[in-house]
Amino acid sequence: MKSAVETLDPTRVRLTVEVPYEELKPSLDAAYKKIAEQVSIPGFRKGKVPAAVIDQRFGRGAALEEAINTSLPQFYGQAVEENKIEVVGQPDVDLSELEPGQALKFTAEVDVRPEFEVPAYDDIEVEVEDATVADEAVTERIDDIRKRFGALKEVEREVADGDFVTLDLAASIDGEVLEDGTAKGMSYEVGSTQLIEGTDEAIIGKKAGQTATFPSTLLGGSHAGEEATIEVTVTAVKERELPELDDEFAQLASEFDTIEEFRANVRETLERSEQFEQVASARDKVLEVLLERVDIPLPKSVVDAELAWRNEALDRQIAMGGMTREGFFKLQEKTEEEYNAELADEVRDGVKAQFILDKLANAEEISVNEGELTNHLIQRASQAGMRPDEFAQQISSAGQIPALVGEVRRGKALNLVLEAAKVKDASGNEVDVKKINAPDVEDTDGENPDSHGRDPEDEHYGHKHD
Image (cartoon, rainbow, N blue to C red; front, top):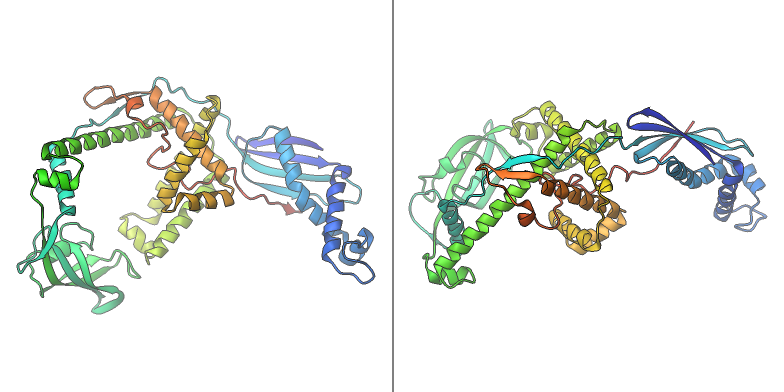
């Protein structure tokens, strides 16, 4: 087999491949054998139909198409390997007409990884917020824990902030109550802002049995994003009685004997959380610096595929919420054009980050062991709301294990950059990210660089005939 490569632009090449008839013949013989086993022709036993008879009955094209479909991916892969091409995405293949006894000739245009130098990263300096925990934050966290052990008691008074109420709701437009705009017996914590905007203001000061109306924008349903009149009726009012903040509560809510020990542990937990937030912020910022330091041409097919995937995911999300795209963008307080522009920038940065981190991982010869892959799989399963064994089976069946390995490698590469950087807080103190950072840092900006688990190289193979 002979092959040659032609660069069309920095991210796309054309492979020209010529396969001698002798190399194609084994695939052609196998194709005739397969067809012979599938057809029934009088006078011949199944599987024993001669090639000439198959050509006469079905045309030689049937065997050629079978042979080519079977062997073309192999010849294409061989050409890619021989020319040392790092392909991404799916090739567009043009196949010349194959004459009897003649060589198979085809061209394949495909996107490739861009060539660039890994930017220097040992001089990166970033600043993050101070990891301080105010006394008020400790008190607020303890109060949150007390609420879990509180008891609800029904009261006969006006609704106040922090109460728990039972509500009946009905939304109407132009005087007509919406079919999907009613709810009865809904429990709600006043002040949580978990219901439609304006609910808190409408019910505070009301007693059980009283009704209020107010205008608001619907958040879901068939009229999401539209203005409606909301009628809300309070049917019950309850207040929460919190346990006393004493040693007895500390023993009930924790492993500690005294309230002082319990409070100290809450502060320590919050401080640790703040430190991890510092690391997450630093990780985001060092990645931003890397992105700024190198200009990379991006393969159009990779960017387009990611944009399509994101939009499909958005459509599923909108459909599950019973909304329309128009209603969704209205709630986002931006036009569809503005949203698409922001999404395009986000996707380009994500693809660029992936290429940089992949190349850095290769340069540093970063590998992934079984434990790291297992930990990452468990984390991804949790994000997907699945059991690890179910998620692993799904990923394995879809052939996505290499994509997961790529995610871990990129995470480790970014971790390398993070630990090489100089990180200071707003007060000028150096932050020891190596001490705070978990051994297996995988996220780049709160998500994996390829958060949906796909890889630009993992595309279906296809071709087209002239």
